Image (cartoon, one colour):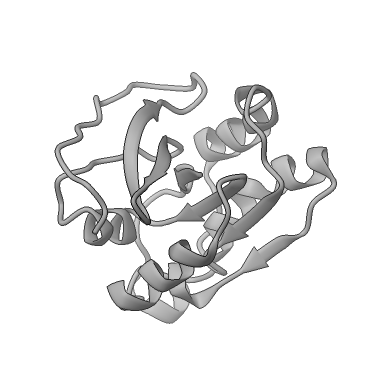
Amino acid sequence: MLLLRHASAGERLSTASLDRTRVLDRDGRTVAKRLPEAFAGHVIERIVSSPHTRCVDTVMPLARALGLEIDRREELEPDAPRRGTMALLAELPAGVLVCTHREVIERLFDGDVTCEKGGTWLLERRARRWHPSAYLPPPPYAKRRPARRRAVLV
């Protein structure tokens, strides 16, 4: 499974309802356009995303390149309960790309895993749990901060 944090979309908007529609900025659009090439070596049979505009816009070029529909799921929204997100991930197969938000990734891994905008964690299923195994930085576009890993999804 590939766990992708949406690409850059500027600053958070004043209310949650407005923030749902925040679009990608120039750096974010560049990253989104480069995802088909960045993921060329990975098997992606399904794309599941938060319904927020910045997530859908991040995976749209990849979905078009692969001829896939984007499955929009509320369980991947920033304020989604951890239990619901984990239940969704548990039912997904290995060949899926999941696009979500920083808050979700932090909740899943108890704050022990970071992910820059447009970055991706490769997760492996072991004993019915998803474990982060490798970090894929976003395609080049600007400054980068290193990601860290110290946790296992439980």
